[in-house]
Image (cartoon, rainbow, N blue to C red; front, side, top):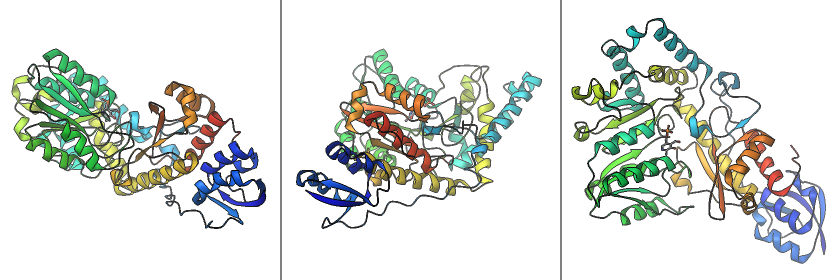
Amino acid sequence: MGVYKILWVSHVNRWHLVRSCRCPCVFFRQASSVNIRVTPTERQVFSVDVRYCMLEGVSGCSSPMAAPSIPSPLPCLGRHRAWQLDPSWAFLNHGSFGARPVAVSRVQDSHRRAFERHPIRVLDDELMQPMMESTLEAVAGFLGVDPAGLVFVPNVTDAIAAVLGSMSFKRGDEILSTTHAYGAVQRAMEATAKMHGAKAVFASVPCPVQSMEEVEACVLDAVTPRTRLAIIDQITSPTALRFDVDRLTRLLKRRGVDVLVDGAHAAGMLHRPVTTSAHWWTSNLHKWGLSPVGCGVLYTHPSRRGITRPTAISHMHFKGYQQAFGWQGTRDVTPWYTAPCAIDWVKAREGWAALRRYNTQLSRWTARTLCDAWGGSVAGPASMRKGVSMVTVELPRAAARWRVPNRLRDALADRFKVEVPIWNDGPRWWLRVSCQAYVRPKHVHRLVDAVDALLLGVIPQR
Ligand SMILES: Cc1ncc(COP(=O)(O)O)c(C=O)c1O
């Protein structure tokens, strides 16, 4: 038995210490000058993760590992009042439906008012043409593509349905994606396959994944002579990983497979996000592009523009690709008309490059903080998270006691005002944190404390 002075202890060891030493004092983040009694058996616990624990008198202990630096908040883009979110919440789920600045919704309101003042002048198929063209041009400029290939859609779900509906599948054909694909996309593939007697195939990509090469091998292994279409994620939704879609597109095209890139999270998050070599690329501007909900885009390669048709057939159907998508019946066009204003709103402040830098830096810091706290893994290596503003981290094993992920999600929301999506893969539970200008390290700390409290019954110290 020896008495050691704790100089610093990470969350990982706080857990071990509490379990084995029943020493509540170590719940302080900085536990300096706290003396604890440690038996030789208990010292084993520390030696496992000695990197994360500095005990005076224990050989081999050096200072804690340098953590990634915390980014400085963006004074204009990060101002909470610029956003409409409830400031009392730690809102860590920008990835699902985005969030909009106040200024963007005001512009959308003005478009709505203009429509209500004179519906015909705004929505008439011919009169809306110039407005549609200039809006598409502005968005194409932001994305760095030829506007001739770009059309607006309400969302990525709609764009994927349009592509699936534009292809003629035969019995026995295969539509390929991976197990990291968004659930609704998987359902769309299965429904389309069922309708044609075809097959939806999901290449099994593990989680955590080790490398892009591993993903590539999984995808290519699943290709057969019957594979007609592959739907490849650019940034995966549950695991927040960036796939090398340029390379995958090249490899799949070489095997005669059409490629649709699901870039739902890419517009706004990545610089020059469009995979122009793919047959189709789609994204939402209402996530990281900060546009009103209902603002998606589809970019079609010149070789497929002739066959690509929207989900709804209307007046302009035989007038070409862009015309057919441009008019699909009476619908709310204000999300599209507002998209350029959202782009300019960021440009007029710290700008897109600074916003992306803040978000990715915060996401790196978050990954490290949560791994330190819970001793779990990140869903994939840093090389697959470059430029990604979200991170998926494993929860402590005790999470599985909640049985249903949404129950834990709801408890975090109801009791701690933390909004974060949670899912499980067998006994391993994961959560995804989205980093956006309005997110601060204190929100991530609140998440850590809330999880500690719910899984260990620890009263938060902060
Ligand atoms: C990867 C991915 N694909 C598709 C979608 C569907 O987007 P929407 O619901 O806007 O159609 C999402 C939504 O989160 C997504 O993350």
